[in-house]
Amino acid sequence: MSLAEPTTDAATEPRLAEQPRRRPGAFGRLLRSELRLVLGRRRAIVLLTGLALVPLLLGLVLFVTRDTALAGQGPGFIAQVTGNGLFLVVAALFLCMPFLLPLCIGIASGDAVAGEASTGTLRYLLVVPVGRSRLLLVKAIGALAFAAAAVAAIAVVGLVAGAALFGVQDITLLSGTTVPVGESVLRVLAVAAYVGLSMTGLVAVGLFFSTLTEVPVGAMAATVCVAIVSAVLDQLPQLSAIHPGLLTHHWLDFAELLRLQPDWAVLGQGLAIQLAWVAVFSSLAWARFTTADVSS
Amino acid sequence: MTVAPSRDEAAGVHPAALAAPADVADASVWAVRTEGLTKRFRSGQVAVDGIDLAVPRGAVYGFLGPNGSGKTTTIRMLLGLVQPTSGVAWLLGRRMPESAATVLPRVGALVEGPAFQPYLTGRANLARLEAADATADPRTARGRAEAALERVGLAAAAAKPYRQYSLGMKQRLGLAAALLRPRDLLVLDEPTNGLDPQGTREVRHLVRELAAAGTTVLVSSHLLTEIEQVCSHVGIMSRGRLLVQGERESLVAREAVRVRLLTRPADVAAATAVLRRLGLHDVVDEPAGAEGAPVTATVGDHDPAAVVAALVAEGVAVLGFGVERPSLEQMFVELTGEGFDVAR
Image (cartoon, rainbow over all chains, first blue to last red):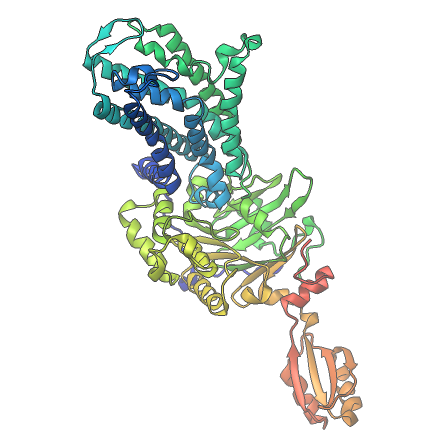
């Protein structure tokens, strides 16, 4: 027997603090702090600036070359840009979609949990304590906010640069019909929204990889690889059976929104696929994160 | 000596805990309790091997052991970061990790060194932890953060980004985070790492101050001498096992306390006779040196002062006399047969 009775002397009597209670607005405080961290860090600002430069540079190049023989050449919607500034948004999104956008979003979502693990701050958040489900939710919202900011950066700069360089007119749709300016702007914004929602599946994949490792670069690379591999598989006609389920299969279907009568079924399918990827990978991320030993 | 030869005969069990098993969770008695806490990693390595930790409320518990002995893994299990393979842990009377949400706000922790967002300032890092604490009062957040920074001597550097901090400043910010609000229990894992001697003294002073205010402190270290002096209780880990634990004073076995007499070589025989007559054990006369002839013996229940008086009364020349108490470090070497700094 070696432990004495703990002291009960009045001066050293352990104080039993009142039972801690959750305070209202606690989730909002954590979320604001997370958003400031995710969107305020230098890397995020560099990435968003880079994305915003795409429509700006594209617009300038098209503006300078518009009277040359090269005018109107190029993939996607580039031919229409000089005629209508609104198409600069669409063309820029089209150019960023296969690689640049997934890269930036892979970096942000792959870093979400793994970044905290690698700096060791994850253990301190958990002992504050922040519940693991709550923390994962906040991290997911942070990564989604970055994805939204990335698409918005392209759309807003594209809209402003397009309007300044080429003016905004009624859009002549792919089907040949012309719609007025107001509706045209709405349709372009809908394109941006569809692109943003198309990124949610990738964000969930990134979040899952982020819970697997303490090396953020690994999670980022794996996330970007998923987007690339998906795009490659989508090119192989031999695999047409699995094409509808691929993460990237419906990414470019935003063009539907530029038809007089968009095929809502195609767009709905695109969003449903994203929803499925989000459901599967956020469940995996949750299952992993709420049970994993945090030894970083 | 309270050596725990096996898990079943764990040392230092509180009488209350023996009387009724339910009392292991009695928060007025125990700040930390574990029973058979074990962590086996997927690699098969057993990092923590069935330890029964008992930290009484109000204690300063020195959790000692070489690097790699399982201290940090134990602390991670106590805080709910790592799931035990088997065994149970109570923090302030609540089961962990199930009660993390209600218990951890009352626990300040420094786990395996400080870690903060490198690009945020010290102050912004504390604000982030404040924002994450669902039970903290946001109205007092700023004031409490400033007070914590002040308390660890970091107020002047609060506006600097964390990555510009020296190791000592980082450690201080970690302590400030643990002190953001009043705590019932502080778990400080290697709080003196990276600190210079002055910083180490400040940490010891801080621990004493907090303990005096009623906070239980569980402080781990691989440097015995750094924190030995502030601890009321001690537990020693080696290779995943808790070798001994209990009150620091009682840990050093009485049998190990020896008196050392320095006398003239001519008086050695008389001194030996006196000590034997008094009933001291293991009387040994050592080779005489320039300063005199040493005679040592286990003091047992005898009053060292009475021993000196008896020697003088018998005409033995007492050139020097002292009581030698083995340090925890010596005890550790005796228990494990290896040096304290040996990692596994």
